[in-house]
Image (cartoon, rainbow, N blue to C red; front, side):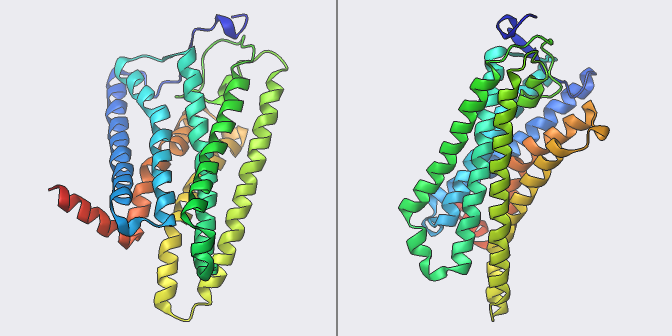
Length: 307
């Protein structure tokens, strides 16, 4: 293949080649996908319908659930279809769309988790200014900034990646279209532009990570100074779910992209990519509902009302 214009489709990495294992993989993916749809859908419905949850923290949680739904829907349905129909192909346009939407939702999630850390910081360290700093307009602006930054990153990376000349085949060592795997197919120095963009993105992610760490250092210092044990417990209960979600997001992403090349293998890469792209969107609703009594009560009322 001389360049990208001659490529009409890409070949994705299969999870299994035996027909029985492919069907087993399909049912496993279907169960995870339905669990993610149900969990995130319940949170979105509860926050939207329960006026007790119309606060900045739950507004951002609603946005996170929307991002989770988009993130897992960008990758898993195609993997399910390929496993069901014993197929590895994805069209060129389908691959571009997958890269765009996956990068869009992952970038937006990083920004939103940073905003949610700021929300917890203001609530605990500056409670008297909470209504002023996090009014409805400020929350809408911060959420819009998170979505907008994700969209801008996705447009830049998708346009830059698919303008490259690709001449090293069309097989990707990944179960979904991922920018680093597409760069391996490039045969010109122009791929350095995309590498540069990835470095800039990595710096921005690192800046968000530093902000998260500094915020939680301040939060824990403030919580430990609270005289009431009940107050400390309530403060921790609102922070720990977000901290657990951030830890899951950061740990899986860092292991996926920063693991030593010496331990890299197709099977390990497949497992790690599954962990960071599929597990967080499915696990986040469970993490938030386990420690949040207000959310659990709202979900109980919602389910009871339905039946």
